[in-house]
Length: 329
Image 1 (cartoon, rainbow, N blue to C red):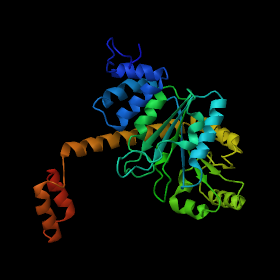
Image 2 (image 1 turned 60 degrees about the vertical axis):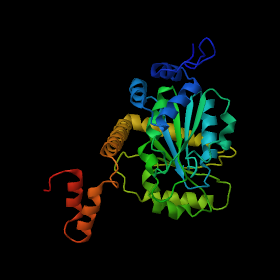
Image 3 (image 1 turned 180 degrees about the vertical axis):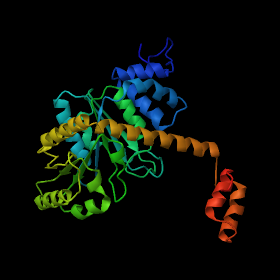
């Protein structure tokens, strides 16, 4: 009986966490959806979910796709899914979208550009709302990646919100970061300003059939060549694509595979994943600490401390120590 099977009389029984995890491991989309919803809603059972999933994680190749709005991230993701499915791989897609200011949901939740794969049982696509979290990702993205990993996805593609000059968090959440640029958008300068030249493992100049694409590619290669890289370091390739027609996408997949092999051979994969887990643990601990501490702004002693700092009778560090209850050094 499936976790959502109706009981005699027509009532559905509530699925237990072990039931949901087992069903997700079998690739049942509904179970995967419910687990990710539990992640997004911060369900009271989330700790049990993560504990049950942990032994089944660490197998998926996690690829982050980032770039400015309009470079073709969703179209490129769709083209990558097509190629990966042709290679027999199960694919999960987490598409992080801007949030509705009214409902908090994902504004582009229908993922129209990926509708080609809506009926493919080997593809799971989920839109996630950023919900005000900076960095181009949703706060719950790391846990959602774990769900798809444990559900048997060979590759998990994480598509960010269109990034600006600071939203490059995807580099800390993926094994391989794919950065997309396009001609006619000033991306050569923007890439340097945004720190994108430091985060990319594979660079893609999409819409390469447009004027200026060759110049963007040359500029990008020139800037990358000036980076100071130690011997044996990965040297990011620059690939030209027309994602809407699929041109160049096979080369992108080949470069992703080449980078993943390099990560294994050098031990960098383990280092990246350990660093990722460390940041995830810290984020969860800090969030729990804030909740246990309560509403700081509503605490009456904060006003008195703020007045003392403003009057020069105290400094902000000493005031913060007093607010925390720690003895002043």
